[in-house]
Image (cartoon, rainbow, N blue to C red; front, top):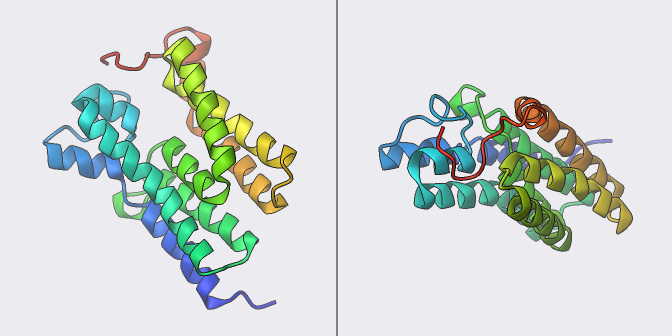
Length: 200
């Protein structure tokens, strides 16, 4: 079976778009330290919030979400098949984790995963956002909220009978989120994890 060139191109474009590290670019524009070398050393919105404040963090968050939703939405506009859409979503997520343009040193992928899910299944994305918000309000722990939402997402997709490839891809993303948060999990277990807004 031959894979159409369009499908391959869209998956590759998804990875390249995911490789645009919003946190690093925003911090450079704002004259802030490299987020890979400051705070939690994670190039993501939560760390940008710690080292730079709300405005650059919000822009970082928007950029990371857009990296996930944009390539999936383009794929939908071009009417590619469901397996290709799932592959595009995973490619964008992997681009954020291992960005080609930044020595493969990326973030943990929470916002980009949300953006990809928003493109694939908006209703499920809003449900997982609700989980994230509830956990954040109750605990003020971004990592715990992200892990909770990441684990819930594939379960909801399966329960709602979405295409199996979507469920599988979100399952892979959930496993990678857990792996990327392994140090956070250790700190959560020892009650040493930083709360949102807390300075390093």
